[in-house]
Length: 205
Image 1 (tube, helix red, strand yellow):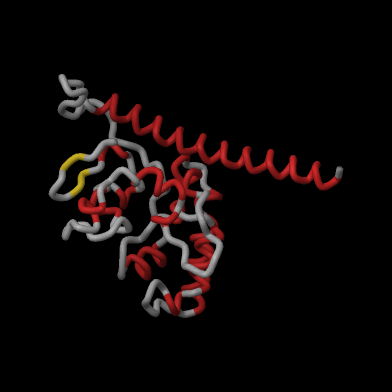
Image 2 (image 1 turned 90 degrees about the vertical axis):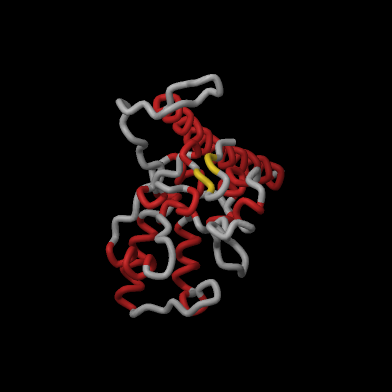
């Protein structure tokens, strides 16, 4: 009897967690739709020139606001916002800087601790933004280093994009090269209606 109760409770918690993630994902997509409707004057295809009277898009992932992180990590690659991975994932990354995706990214202890604290305090599972909350759910266990591109939400949002548009595109090369297609990525705006794939054009699934 006790084992049955435990199984039932575990099942309910799992369903509630999945529901929370899907809800956050749907809120992010709804915000994208609202922005698109308010930004583009409709033509026969449903889109048109921007409505200049409308304000610009708001950040759906909190922009990077730490100089140490921006300078140290942004010197080698795009400074990914903390809200794109969970605290557990960022902790794993900071624990393995000497083998940082094939490179040695070791830092002095004070710098490493400051960056770790910033990443964990602003991680996806501790953020209020809907898109960050959606990113909070993703594979973080195992021996492999966490990757934003391996999260459930990222896969859901990018699975329809042909690999030739990204990996076979010399101006993009990788799905991790966010800013190549999300021109507003640095400001924390990942609105799907603003995606422009180099050599392909506007992408809106």
